[in-house]
Image 1 (cartoon, rainbow, N blue to C red):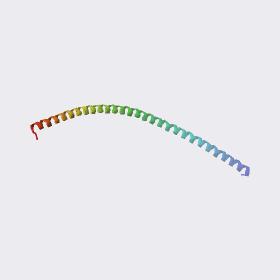
Image 2: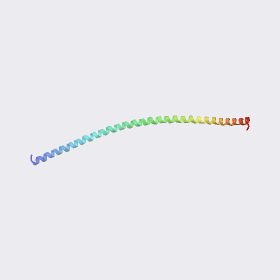
Image 3: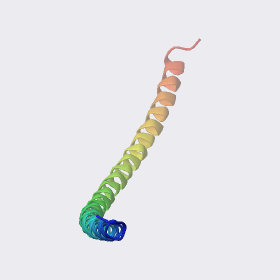
Image 4: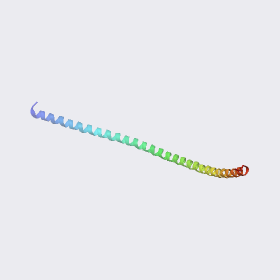
Length: 106
């Protein structure tokens, strides 16, 4: 082969190499884009599930809060009753001390 033929062959090989790199790059970009689309769809699905769980969790917490408020109200009622019993016992204690002083004078 003479020199112009070698240069022509090198040009053809360089063009083929450049074409292959371009085609390969395009295919890789399309594949990567498609994979990112799939990943984004999966993230969207997971986000929707998390939002659903968040809503369910908030409803359950509201239910638990209502139950705690009811328990608090019941404890307040019990505290009031115990205060009344304590006042009665204090009154009885004073009465017993007065009776004891009358029966057993010092």
